[in-house]
Length: 310
Image 1 (cartoon, rainbow, N blue to C red):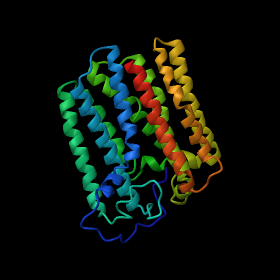
Image 2 (cartoon, rainbow, N blue to C red):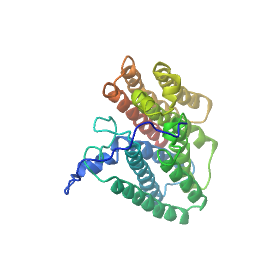
Image 3 (cartoon, rainbow, N blue to C red):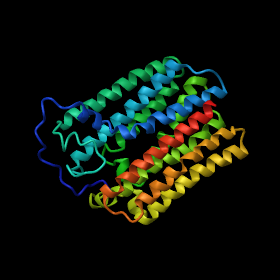
């Protein structure tokens, strides 16, 4: 992990517009990424039907809290990448509120903290209706969200970004959503969470493949940088294969319904995503493949949720 970033902090930014369009704030949330928090909650809740009926109020509270934590994490990302001089007007895949629209950095930071605070209030409600162990896991998740790009040793700048994202936005959210409904964790719920963890990690890997050259110039040590672009693309494809093989294995080796094979309908998206990276070197050229990777997570997750509900 590299503690020092070579780029200097920008000394100025565009003047803040008094009437900032709602699109600026919407883009700051990075809405195309929010399915990574919505899908795990949906899957964890769908798993509840194997045990008991769904408490919809707890589902909504968990869903909103998860989305708020991810949105806040995106804002911390925006703030700290600006502070470290990594984001410019030409950067691809960012909200751009600070470097393009002139929103003061402190406003973005305070908004992120506010979203965390609201998530905490929702967490208290969830704990009152389930278990206070949820508070411990939730607190750790929020800390990881902040430390992903905040603090002296950001996780996102290390080879462990994919691992952190996969664990906390896969099994952790899924099992929490399941636990608050049922008061337990089962082996089946753990097995179901594994391919989602892989696909969330794939989103981060795709992001790092896209930004490889810029990240390397900034002194980052991401997994994509360590193994190189070609091997990173191969790893991405292998992660997709693993997710599908896992689903087939569950259909054959466990008591999972054959409906789980619905996830195979998302294979064309996986193929397009991998092909979209091959032979590309510029971030703007790889942006469609990056979006396809996020869409794959969403489509695979929705199909898996439908299978669980059926």
